[in-house]
Length: 337
Image (cartoon, rainbow, N blue to C red; front, side, top):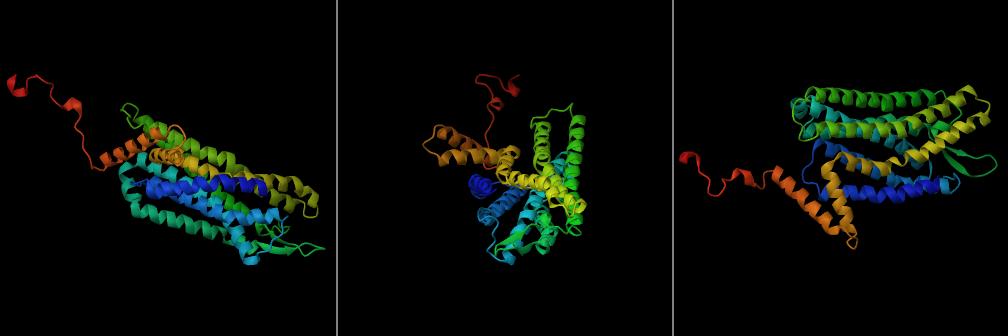
């Protein structure tokens, strides 16, 4: 586990720091999806900053030397991070749904101020959801030694509190968002099919399918096994309270899922590139410029310049007269006919 967490830290921290730099310095026009993607990146970066504590803990053979308050904070933040990621992915899906099914209402329902307030509400709600983790995190001393362990609430032998809490988080923090993403996607696809006779120059249906597919893949491959293995580890302690040997396979599956789920901090920057076309172009250009000796830097610069020109044109900063609008040389005007 420490080797896996260290690899995630080495890979994920530069990607997320680079994403934050792109958000602050390269993106001039922020949409609602941009705000949600920024908060998702901020959550990833904050969690990666706290990951060295877990790496040190596992590298030291589960010997916690930093006291109970920091143990409670690290465990709570680890639990809180996954639901932050889930909720912001859900917000992105709902944003696309409103923009397609209710384009006029979306301007009122999710304006700039409402979007910022929603992001604050997500941070506050996930924090409240994770507060019980702090009360269930304990410092325990191993028998026959002075080694102290920062115990994870899922591995406690008493399940009167841990099982109801884990099931509640699975329903509120995972099942409801999953149903919301499926509903938004199906309604949006149905709306686009009803408009199939109209031209679609912006390829909205294709973009929606990309958003829905990416969100479902994140849920199916990462969050579903995590919640199943977590609840299974607690259920095994409830069914076989006096047989620790029966817990071994469930604990092993959950430990592997803890490692696998930490990859989400590396996947989310790629998810941002997959969803946001403007962010993807600026991210690729910034990444290429960092390696100025590599071939293709000039192409990346041209992409960045074309992207900025497109943004300026959309904002009305430059106007270009189409060539087809100009009369051909020698042609007769309307008054000469």
